[in-house]
Image 1 (tube, rainbow, N blue to C red):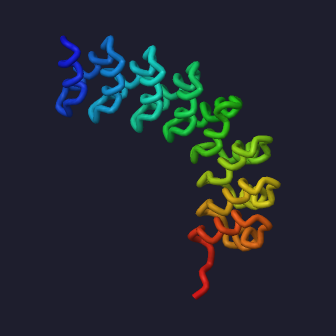
Image 2 (cartoon, rainbow, N blue to C red):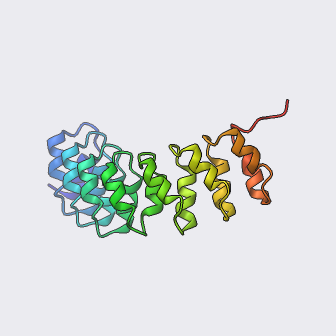
Length: 199
C-alpha cells in the first residue's frame, strides 16, 4: 500500500474498523496521527497507538474522548510529561490514576482541575505550596464550599480571583471577595453569574 493510499484511508470516514487497526502499524507518523482523529477508530486501536514511538501520536490518544480508563492508566506512566498532562485532565482517567499522578510535581495542577479528582485530594491540594495548583483547585467544578471559603482567603490574589471565577462559588463568598483589596479579584467577582445584580 502506498503512502497516498494509507492517507486516503485514514481520512475516509467509511474506512472499516479492521483497516484502521491495520493502519496503526503504518511506518508514517502523519498517517498514525491522522488515524487517531478518525471518527470510527476503535478503543482497541487507540490502545495500540498508546504504545506508539511518537509522543505526538500518544498525546492525541491521551486527549481522545473515547480513550479507555485502562489505556489512560498505561499512558499515565508515559515518559513524556506532555502526554501525562492530557491523561491528568481526561474525564475517563480513573480516580486511582489521578491520585498517583498527583504525586508528580509536573502534573499535579492538571489533576487539581480534573472534575473527577476526589474531594479529599482536592482538600489536600488546596494547601499546596504552588499557587498554580491552588488556582486549579479553585476552578474545579466539584470543589466543596468549605475549600472555596478557605481559598477565598489565600494570600495569592490569583487564587482568590480563581475562586471568584468559579460558577459554583456561593454568593456569601462572592460578597466577601467583592470587597477584596485587589482590583482584579473584584472585577472577576463582577463577571461571576452568581453575583447578585442591582436592578
